[in-house]
Length: 435
Image (cartoon, rainbow, N blue to C red; front, side, top):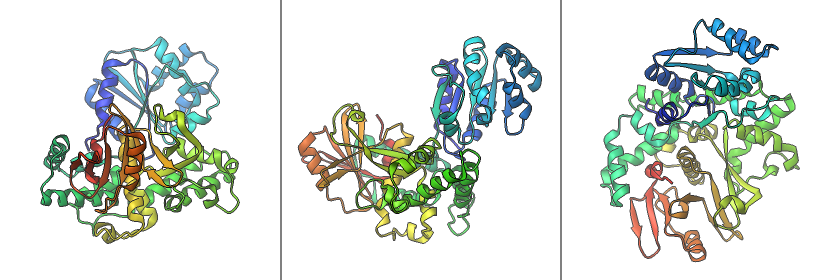
């Protein structure tokens, strides 16, 4: 599958000598794309998996100095890493905190050695490591599940992508048959989400929903929790993490439009669950959207610390948790949760494009789903799951802040109203929103 992150890997190869560390939720395709990159772009490719090669973990646990460890590493992998056009991929690097710390040594003493690192729940390990992290000596890159454009590429819909981009850039309407086709693929994406294995099942069955393996996402979710048990401090913490995660579908439908600890269990307070919530965010299983009291630059300066939303990292996993029948997703028969699912989908697409997530509330009278900090300033975004596109909140926001324009995402076609300054973008074109 074609992944946009490949272009970021090429930029690193051509412009940066630091070791590269790739973070991302489990099973989003990190190992696959790194393997492809290393095989395609380098003459010599050395793969190390610290789950399997415990001798390397033992080496870096030893009291040897860095120079001696480097010499012995070359003996263990049976290769001279200083040979030109060589790359070393260290998978499951979270198994050695000492090796993570030693990346500083590689950067300073052997920056001719190209190194990529990845691992399961690596973000959690970095938060809780006892060793110093080599700040400034490692290039960090976040990777996410496939976005909707990558999904369309996997479904061999290059021509549809070109049409969507043309209509977006020229702000012209798309033909009704193509609009309906694109919405059909959007609803299919709600089923598969962006996990590569899930999309591959849909591709392999040529879009046959009956033969699509809907157990894949359930298995991925189970694997999250199986992995979690390896990287928690206690069974109590594991239980708290599960409770938070299991509460998320009801949190998203919360009328207060914010995360509430009381939804986890009666009487729960922030201090009881802050560490567990931090674990979930570090694992990339959830994404936080911060509420701001003022839509001013910088948005981070106006956040309300105790008011936020949590989205699941993948909309397909959300629908799997909700146990919604595929037919109901395809026929848009989801009732109240239709809007919640669309909002989670948009959050996923925005994160893939590098946006930080913020939203705005005005004394509970109006709410803007997302605020995008772009070259045009702060742009408000409202998400609608259907054709009902009343823009009360956008109108209130526009009166207060007078943005250059506003965005309404829905099932309607492309369009722009110069009077209201509202730009209409179909749900299937969210991947085109950039800085």
